[in-house]
Length: 581
Ligand code: FDA
Image (cartoon, rainbow, N blue to C red; front, side, top):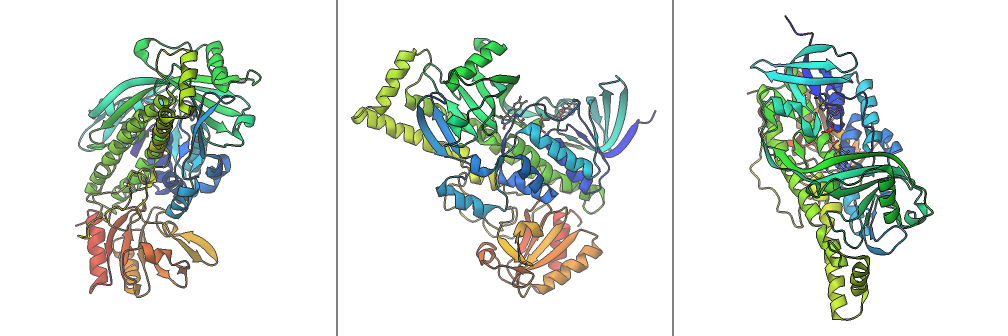
């Protein structure tokens, strides 16, 4: 009995990771089927923060403008407020996500794309539209029940949830984008390190017009902190879904202390307590719970199976890295699958996915966990602790504002605790500076530049092989284009400067002889004018040097200046990176 369906890639899951994978594979023309157990895309807001690296992926897919149209722009994201309630006392504030004057220029210089706030139930339909337009085959209400692999491929049993009909799908590769309870990971023996169930979170999606309390301090996150409650993030985090009338109220609890009352009356009461204004109407749209994990897969590849997104790494929402890392995983893997399946690369290229993304997954789960822990000093600086009465809490706050040495120390502690939050809310290095070491990168023997600032907080542009190509604005036909715009779109790119024409000639020849999508661009004057001279500052090569850039915008190889044999050297680099020895 043969399988009911055969395909090259089976993608399991159509969340942010699976939809991005489906869209990218479709753009490459890969024969793929995406199955997802639910009847539609996310039905609640979930993750919000969409960082500039992810928006660069949307830009590459041609949907940056569509996403921006339905997102809340960076200018309305910035004010992180700590308060006893919206109507109550403001306790602290930090300008976040690169929106403050100290960080704005660094964020703007780093990327052509700006961070935005786009809740998952609004983002996923955009990704689905893109994937469908590109021809992706996405099957809803289709649940993976079991999957096994052998030397040549994977065999999956799926069930149509509407009809109860079972089907078998045979695929050359499977991508497990099936979230935190991944069946792919369980069935195919992936091992994980870390801890699960560290706490539980409740997301209350609601309508409440808080314009009066937010318009003058527009932001994405408002932290309510009240006496007697210092558990994880305090009394409740308000996440803006739609300025300033739709929100998620997120709070955390310790399941070992019992489950909270999640009745409508109880969550309305909780919302009212943290709003602090009895006249604001609250309408609940939905309530959902989820658990806090600190877990990463030891390997992201086992044979013909790959894990992307939450299937591979599960962590708290701090730093907003959930959907971002998920989409970026797919951006790393999709072109590799396409090139191998289409004969442009050898199979070992696929090993580079694990080598490149597993360390990123580990960094992300550790960073997010640390950021959650780093929130405790804030409630401690307020003087709030467990089991405290309202009076004790009020007295603690009075102490924070009191003149004299003790009050001064409290205020210094609070300022330090707020500054620590930059590692969560202004961590541009974590957001954008993924650096890869793998077989899909050909090192040039030079050391990585030593960071001159904290690498978690700050972006360090470099063209060292393995780094994301630095962004610089260029001018083409009176229009601004980013260096990143010259690369990507599924192909390799060669970037050189005046005197680098032999690299361009070599690239044109090799695109044909190796049958690899490879474009070539001279940056300097003329077609891609470095009008501001910024590229010359960033490129770390001479005018006649070259960068070979992968479809995911990462530098694969570079030469500092023109070599004796540009065609031979570029060919050797491509063959190395693509496992075509
Ligand atoms: P995701 O979980 O989004 O998608 C998994 C997909 O797999 C779904 O399409 C599902 O149908 C499918 N699937 C699962 N099992 C399957 C099977 N056996 N067969 C077929 N399909 C299957 N993060 C954050 O940063 N901030 C936040 O505030 C929140 N809030 C939040 C709330 C709630 C309620 C949840 C559940 C999650 C969050 N998150 C979050 C986490 C964030 O949503 C998460 O990091 C991303 O959605 C991960 O995207 P993935 O695509 O990897 O998985």
